[in-house]
Image (tube, rainbow, N blue to C red):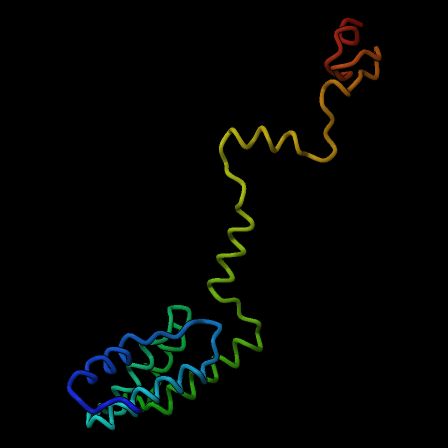
Length: 163
């Protein structure tokens, strides 16, 4: 708002508007306020885009996880006339719906996946996994129930197999 109205600022503000992206987890109202601020700056510089273009730019700024609301809004408009108010209302409603349902963002999902798949599947780590099991005893601690000698079990006992 306080920037000079010159030809050098116009492309930068327009580029900010086009390149703006919503990040999951941030408040939608904050995103909409920033969007409206950029539109106001362009209007002060006498660059007027239509309301439909504003709506399309706002829809384009939503991430892939919001793809269902983007498709719904773009296909359910009466007569194909998409308005900025419809997009803003739809985005705010979707944010509220996600908060109520406890929607997990993509970044949270990736953190959870990484926690579950932290073990490598190489043979080197498989040996370490066998050593760290809770109830397994090493062969030195195991003794046969039949003959009482260490380092084997009854089903492995030579004396038991001979009898």
